[in-house]
Image (cartoon, rainbow, N blue to C red):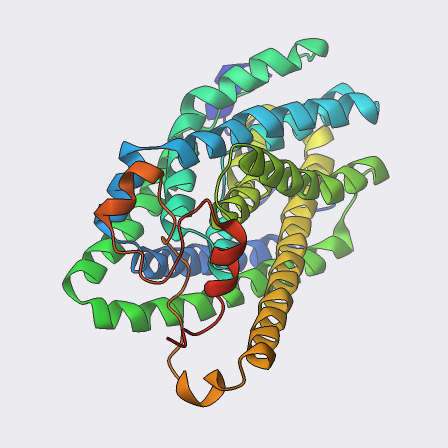
Length: 373
């Protein structure tokens, strides 16, 4: 399909709601409601998470972007390579392989920020990674697709959705910047907004999961693509964690980079598929994108459940070892968010009771229990 087709309303990939692809009829209203509701909820969630970000700590991440660099390496190094290996390993048809590569080349999505919050990750790093990966996608998506799609021959060219990337970037930066300002001016109110945003974020994940299940009733997807949509985000989480660990990141950053690596921006992937494929292939590929989105939420919820169970176990173990602390320590330890910075920046911020990042195990434990000094 030529690039001119992207702006042509008669192109099969740009069909209107009156002429949807076969198998997608009757779902237009549900998708419209889901799109509008998701946009509103994402804006509120990103605004509330912006309230957890301190401008000086965010600036330190940007000045010493080691964590961001590792995250970008995972996002545009490991994920496209993993997509390529999965396409080769499963012997996918050319149009299926291209769809998997598109997914692997997409930047991180908002779901990663929600999940990072619930695993006590570094929200400054998470938001920085999401923003930077979206900006980098303007150049890295075409580069990754050029490098990896040369193994297959397609009768049409791929169209990068630059407009969608720009809209995503604006919808991310504006709410987060507003939240940072609120946190700077009214820190007490920002704490309350953050709690509300965490609840809304949980609702957003639930809405995504339920909608994916509802839409699954009409799915027409190859079993191989369904299997890949299940294992791909999981492989991303594992590879992201391992690379972060091997580069000596803190446990908090390891969790953050792991979540960011496996959670892709599904909206950008769908937009690119709609611009690049004809209706003959579009239904199956859109369902692959929806399945990936559903599985990345399910995997994320399992990670959150496992982490929260581990956290409760550590608290119980600490209380058994220090029974005298139960009556004395009524105040909660501050969230671990933003506690770990690079070595050269540690003196610039107050770390409180959190240990330096070299002491991974100690920091992991002390972030979950109250102080009894």
